[in-house]
Amino acid sequence: MSKILKKSEKTARRIPFPETVLEFQRWFPDEESCIDYLYQSRWPEGFVCPKCGSRRGASRIEAYRRIECAECKHQTSVTAGTVMHGTRMPLRVWFNGAYLVTTHTPGLSALQFQRQLGIRTYETAFQMLHKLRSAMVRPDRDRIHGDVEVDDTFIGAKKPGKRGRVAAGKVMVAGAIEVLEWEEQKERAGRLRLQVVADGSAASLVGFVVDNVEAGSFVKTDRLISYSKLEQKGYTYRMVETRELEHIHKAFGNLKTWLEGTHHGVSKKHMQAYLNEFVFRHNRRKTPMAGFQTVLGLATRAKGPTYAELYSAGPSATWNHPNS
Image (cartoon, rainbow, N blue to C red; front, side, top):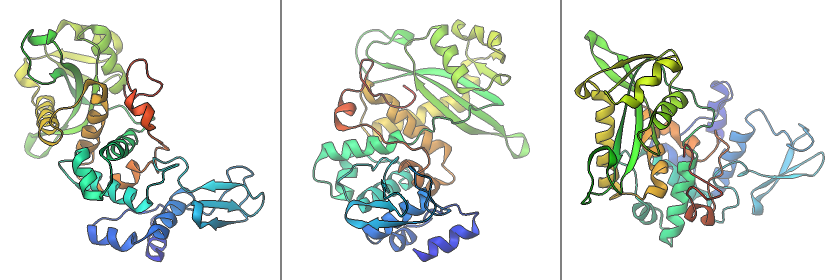
């Protein structure tokens, strides 16, 4: 781990992340190396006691993954504030899982995750994946801005019955994506936002835009009347033909292919978690390795749901997926 320390000193004390599989294997051969990495991530400038604020240093209690303050003897877990806090699973499994989730482009189903990491039960793998997903959304993340395409779609298994905007048994998802200028007057997709919405009303769809797009942005939508109040919210707004919203439609198409191909469909209760993962992948598609620290909760201070909270997720639950 001395290589990590040396590298971090060269990057303004920021803890780096492994950029290849071979580098990952060299950095994290055992539990000790994972604990060392967590310590450096939490205290890159040296230990500061969260209770008394002392910088005198600390000693490790290896068996419990804890640090004891030399001044007041207060003990702090190196996993506190991360998705791994309180886990009995080896840290190497969590680290490998985080690296798989962020670098495996198509993503992983819970069954694949279980097999790859040798986890004993499907339920444990399912919970671990959702803990990692819970750290994929920064609570203070920026809203997207500039030229933005906005639209909505329905996601769910094909069922007989109503069709169109009142499709029965499906989940309505709103999406917004930045449109960036590229070389030779071409356009490319920028950052993406996706969220489950209650319905196609102005309250739901305009509310989604306000939460995810900066005021003053140029917003294009289809001709659904619900979007007509966007100008009142400070946006430059234009209705266009549906075919002109090519970037958000491509994102919707990729999302549906991913949900069906990798996960074979998902329940409404957990849909937002999968939308968060898809957005996370899209926005980091150029630098997937950089997400390794994020999904462990090192940047967001996320802890993720307990087993009971995960299986009670919903409108009346005590815990809900981020962005719900």
